[in-house]
Amino acid sequence: MDHSRNNLLTQGNIHIEGASDDFFRVFGIRTLLHQCGMRKHHGYSSGMILSVVFNLAFLGVNFFRGVVVNDHAPIGKDAAYDFLKGVSSNWRRFLLLTAVKIHTLFKSLSDEDREIVLIIDDSTYDRSRSKKVELLSRVFDHSTGRYLKGFRMLTLCCSDGVSCLPLDFGLLASADAEKRLCEGVKSMDKRCCAYQRRKEAVQKATDNTLAMVKRALNAGVKARYVLMDSWFTMPAMVSALKKHLDVIGMVRKTPNVKYGFEGESLCLKDIYKKLKKRPGRAKILASVQATLKDGLDVKLVFVRDRRKKDWLALLSTDLELEDEEVVRIYGKRWDIEVFFKMAKQHLRLAKEIQIRDYDGLIAHTSIVFLRYMFVAYRCRMETDQRTFGDLFYACCQEMADINFVEALARILALTVDHAAKFGTIGTATAATLSDNVIRTALKYVGIAPCQLSTSES
Image 1 (tube, one colour):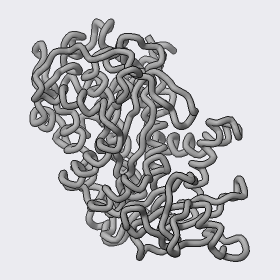
Image 2 (cartoon, rainbow, N blue to C red):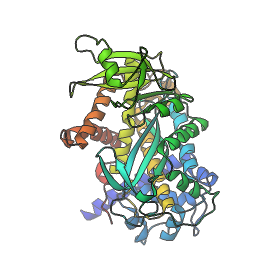
Image 3 (cartoon, rainbow, N blue to C red):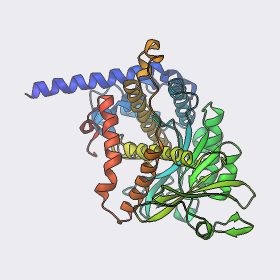
Image 4 (cartoon, one colour):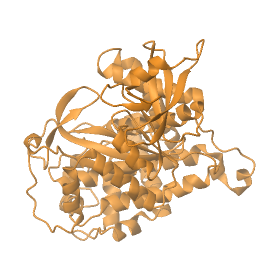
């Protein structure tokens, strides 16, 4: 019986390694590594080292058991550590070039009228049990309202309503030196990628956000809107991003942000009180055109929140967009929440390896993002009939974009999720939707969820 189990496990390993090798070959991963400054270490090519570390999560082992103490590992532990901690490795360029290749493929499977969006959000990179991690800081977790030790993982994703691809990220420490628990001690040339990463780690998230969007657009990502939640949809950020893309975001009900409306400077709640609401059980209560402090015209759409018998407000810089379209497009922001949950829970983000070097954290996070691209690619190839050949391309309709009702459900699900974290409702109820999405994606890829769970060393 043990022999049969080991045989099945070996067959599963061969399947995963074969699928990942095909992914590396199709998108020229090894060539991209060389273009981004990653070279041979201790006699092992960068492609081989990346392949071994990449497959760990899918094989059910962490870095310690799969590489450090594994006598049968195809690479040495010193080679793996040196690869991850290289100061000249341009992981940002590598991640973006890979994502653009996959994005181009996905775009060829979609109709030209479909809205491709960029999504900006942040999540905590938890290292609460660490003491000596480089640039470790006390960061505020918006979802729980508490401080923890770790980083803010500012992330930029691209979505077409079917597939989501991570494009760029930054592990941000606190800009306040008093909240940084461990400063950087590694010596390096100020012209290298590692120094630039450390420099941006202590900058404001708003500065990093604008730079990420510019890099993505310059790299060839074709997007029409950028989506943000209420923590980012502030007047200064909206005006800065509007120079490059139209913005759609949820707006906070704060008295500190004023809008120009009917010759007055009013907060969001005061504007809502003045509006005539749509009768009955309308999902969209009202919409109005207002002006930001710098004179930029925006559209405010007020949506019913049936969970609390309250309302939510969305902002759009595209004044010609219909109210229902604003809600539908904003619903695509749910994709980045699914990405965060899958990266942390299944792809071993911040859990697979215990490393103190900041460059190692950047490298491993980039590999986790690459794993998600692999899952998204495999899922799309298995489910989109347009990938089966030119004969079917003319006969099959493209995969359906999300509709208005689904978008509204996603927005309300996000609100419920935040409420669950504050203890307003049960966490089991709030987690059901994202769990089902993840399990469905894994089923299409041919990976059982149990294969991705591994114990800490």
